[in-house]
Image (cartoon, rainbow, N blue to C red; front, side, top):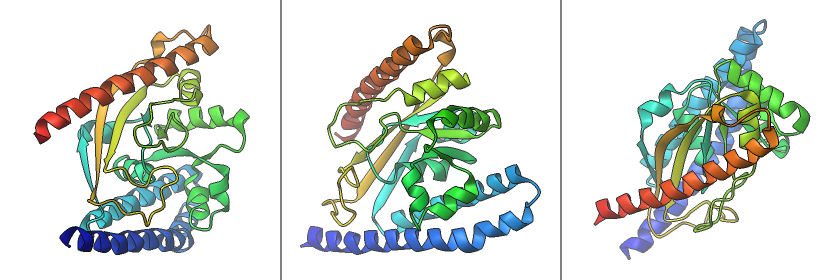
Length: 265
């Protein structure tokens, strides 16, 4: 009975949080962010930075809200390192819908690549236009835009898998992240994410509430030095780098789970 009541509470809590997120996105895009457009009308970079900071604070508040209503709990190992990252590509595996929300709530001046379809979404298009997040609509300009953003000191968040993964699925990284890193001459800052019990994964509706509170664990891993991959053979280097980071995630995921299980027992 207790489990049933807890699940009902978290169902309503989840609905409330998603409603706040959607309505809040519209309010922020129509009332808060336009203020920066007026204040920094002659300085586009300051405007974008102010808008991104506003999103950072908003997402931090949203993560706190999910915790307060009992929907989810977030644990982070290596928080100080992640907060100090500047001008690097932050890569992470992608097990849930809220991964990017949690990462942006931690990382200031975060930039990210967004799908073109989000520009047509009433809840997200205003935020994307004001923050200047990079659209994947034009593949030819994508790498150039990413390099410009990184050179300005922004942190670019990328999920190499390209989409959310199913529980228990093996890591399957695309080459896009490695291609951007090598052509931009930037390093990877790796982050490992695990969500237990599995929830908000690909094809998982928000109302499918697990039997217990969602526990998201983030582990900040070692930085990857991409300079050792020769630029002279860029295509070969991109493939090798992709294989290497994919394998490193497999090894670190297995290592993390072993340590976590020992601590639980």
